[in-house]
Image 1: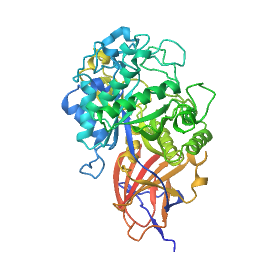
Image 2: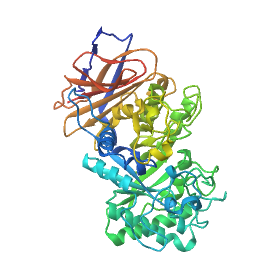
Image 3: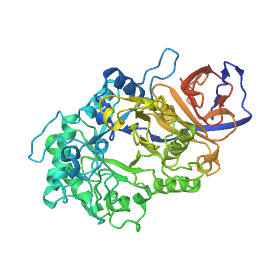
Image 4: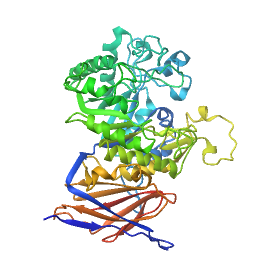
Length: 525
């Protein structure tokens, strides 16, 4: 016999009871379990090198915002409880200075190895501080990623490319040295994962940041050498690859010859550059959600196509995203600083579809910090004018920010926390009963729902993204629920224009209030 349990919560606000104008019934199926969740993460690129040198009390407060899985005295989360931290393995562009080809100090990186072959593990001090802070707060996974080979191993002596060819900016005699370098850093720092090449489809021949293109053949050659170097060290590190600049490069060919169609060429046994049989390569394909989120039909269809193309036994990781697409829902594209819900909801919609349509097991943000006028960040950093816009500042933040500064969390950070704080590693996503039909453009403009279960702890997490302008009252149902589970109480956490992942109380056996333009998580234990 099929068991159906219905539960929810009706929010009573301080000003009185507020009732949603529209009611929705959402039903999940415990008998239809999908992907196991691995992690939610963010990158340290590039500002952590300086933020990690700020005063102890300030950077500890920031670390709590990113990594804490504890609750405060009101019952609200202290932070967003990330479960993976991405550590940028530096190329030495900082030591090379202007000769590195990278203009800004804030986008240059130190390197643990110098051009004479000497190691210095005191380098990347700010980044190492945050890596340790993450571990002290219980973050279970750390991933090292390399954007380019060290400048002294490249063809042009710079930390970025200088031509428009598809080929990697690595000297032929340096492939083994580059592989050994990355394996040694991962082993020394105890990194769980290594992403050795980032967005190989782009040419990276501009001075605003480091970068290195690579063909599939070159990527496979390097990864095979990394596999050998990891084996030599008896290291635990697993290589994750793909890091496609657009998820369509994973499963389509023709637009970036020799650098696209990565699944067929690198992850299928029939592919000419197959790496899936290597002992230290994870059964994971990774990609970036840039440029595939608009129009909304594209948001859905590209993720469905990716899921269908994924080889059996492989998981998908979304490893980098911020909204750069310019469209009616994001009129300025990536430009302009945004602390509010428009930015948060745009990304939350992408997270929802990456999890429910592409069935990503990990979702990782780009990036944790930014001083720029751009929507690419969980926490903005700056001088005193960041928190006091009328304040006149004598010293440019590009200099003062290397020692101290101010910070402001975004609504996007808290909205990510509606997932990352509660949907923990090992939880499994439950499908909706009408899973094949709920993912379409119209749903992406209104209420989006997903559910996750911890079968051992008898815990369920429901996340609702209300993109629409109408409040919703949601009735939650779960089919085939084991008798050992009970949904008679749920705790509610809201991110909206008025709340930052705020605990608003518990209720049972009624309906869940999801305000317009909000993200709400309900937890049943």
